[in-house]
Length: 112
Length: 112
Image (cartoon, rainbow over all chains, first blue to last red; front, side):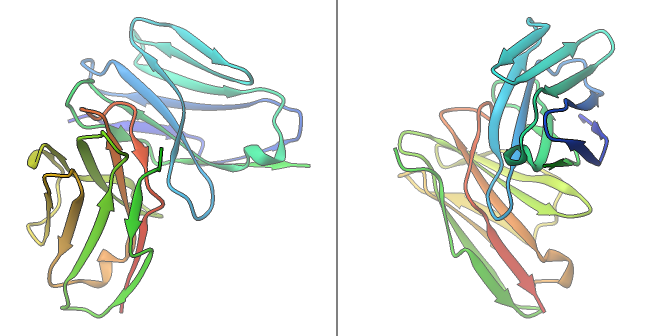
C-alpha cells in the first residue's frame, strides 16, 4: 500500500519568513495530493491540493509543487503569520474511490 | 451549508466497554470516512462508506466496525475497548469519493 513520509515533524519560523514542508510517497499510482491544516481542537481543513498533471499550484501565500518522477511534493507558505501556526498534513491517493494516506504531520510555529 | 458534525465531542469509557460514535456528513455528500488520530501514529484510515456499503477498509481489528444509513449518516462502533483505543476519532465526508474530504471536529475518546 501507499506510504507517505513527511518532514520536518516540527518547524519554527519567524513571522514574515517562508516555511517549507516536504513529503514523499511510494505508490506511483497516486495522482491526488491534498494538504490539510489542523488547528487546536479542530478537524483538519483542506487548504490546497494538486493533481499529477500539474507541477505547481498557488493560492495567495500558499503554493504546492509536485515532482512525480521523484515522488515528492512540497508545501510552501510565504510571508508567514502567527495564524499559520498549526499542524499541517500532506496526503496521497490514487484518486477516485481509493483511500487517502496521510503523512505524520508537521507542527508549524510562527514566532511573532 | 452546515459542516460535518460529530457526536459526542468527548467520551470517557473503561476497558472492556463498547462505544458508538456518530457522524452527520455535509448535506448531499454520500461518502463518509473514519480516521483514528493519535500523537504517535498520525491519521490512520479506519473505513469508508458510500451509499450504505463499506467500500474501503484500513488495517484495524474487527473490534472496529461501522455502518451508514440511507440518509448518509454514519456510526462507528468499538467493542471491548482497550487503553490503546484512546484517540481522536475523525469523520470526513465527500461527495462521492475520498478526494476533497471535509472533516468534522472529531470525538475525543479516553479509555481508562
